[in-house]
Length: 389
Image (tube, one colour):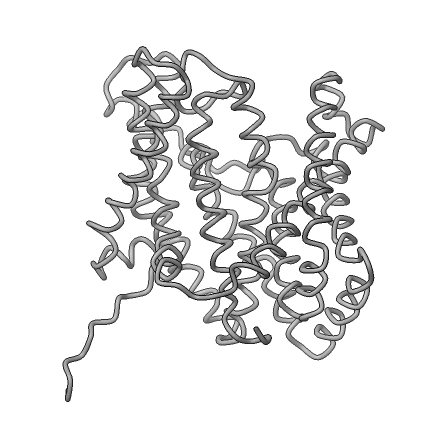
């Protein structure tokens, strides 16, 4: 497919990444990792490993794809129109249905997990009273503890890097992209893009702590810019396609090596800025992240770069599905985790019923309503005109 035409592989990757994040959150109930909104009594190391295998690439891939989408968006609109579109697509759903409907049950589930036994209204009232701006990360602490942080980060990144995005569309910016594409077109050159990922992680991850800190904001901004670069020259795409299976090998090695370090070293060693172990861990993790992204983008370019009716439906549903999915998972898990069943049947029940319920909510209430489409960040649905009108 020539440059400038629709990249169906990018659309498919968005759908795949959304599916991976859905699975990631469904499995979080059953792993042996950090606390979450709800937790099953029995937990599994195997589930933790499976989650880690998804976690290493799913959210990073989403930011790369968002940067790629920005390239195509700025081909058709000015910087000002781009920001207006970002407000409609990200901030409107975030500050309407996101905060005042989708986030509220998650706040109650959090309180329940911490041992609170009071009413839903009391929990929400207390949480509303504690909302504050938090300089330690880009957003509000209370309402963005759930999955909605992604929309906040993506909007702020779009605003912060917009001047650079516009520069890269200029003649001198295109020459810069061409120069980088030339480096990456050599054998294995696409893996040079590991360097900025590793550099930002080494520079910030040990000094700015927290799950959704400014360090992660900068890391995701680098991935966003990387995705933007990749769409600027066809040589990037060709380099990714040639190195698809090398990317998979590096992803597996990176994932396995960072897992080995976690299991064999004291965790505190990874939070000692610029120590030998810290630097080694961040380099290995960066190799794994970019390796999997190269594999997935290369595979999609080879196998998935074609339209289909399923893709049209799924691609349009990605944002409302994202908004709904975690609250639906938690609502179903609220009942399922209390049942006297093993982890596998519980996980299957949560995954299957949550997926179906999320699609039903989208189909029944959002898909065909232009009012709700607006509040879920979607473009209005065109009403077919009768013949001859």
